[in-house]
Length: 107
Image 1: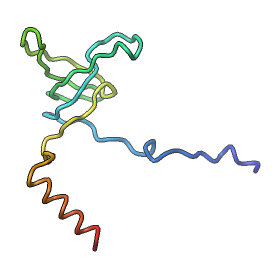
Image 2: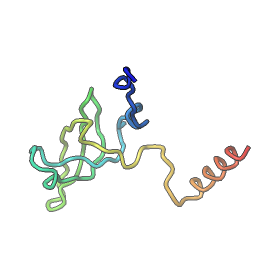
Image 3: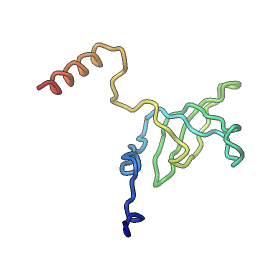
Image 4: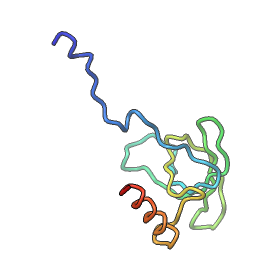
C-alpha cells in the first residue's frame, strides 16, 4: 500500500496516437484563430495541401464568394474525415472487405 501512488491507470487512448494527416486527406479544421470560449469555435471542411512538421496547409472554399483560400493550422486543430485510399462506406468494395475480415476473425 505504500506504493499505491505509483499505480497509474490510464485508458489505452492515451498510449497510442492517431495517424497524422497526409496530402489530399479531407479534414475538418478550426477556422477562427481566436482563443475564446469553445462555443465560438467554427469548423470548416478542407483538403490538406502540405504537411510540414506540426503544421498543415489546408485549401478550402469560402461559401459566400466561392474563392479558394489556403491557410495553415496546427495538427491539433485538424481532424481527418476521409483519407486517400480509404474505402467508401456502402460500396461493393467496402462490403467485400468487411466480409473478408469477418471470415478471417471466425477462423
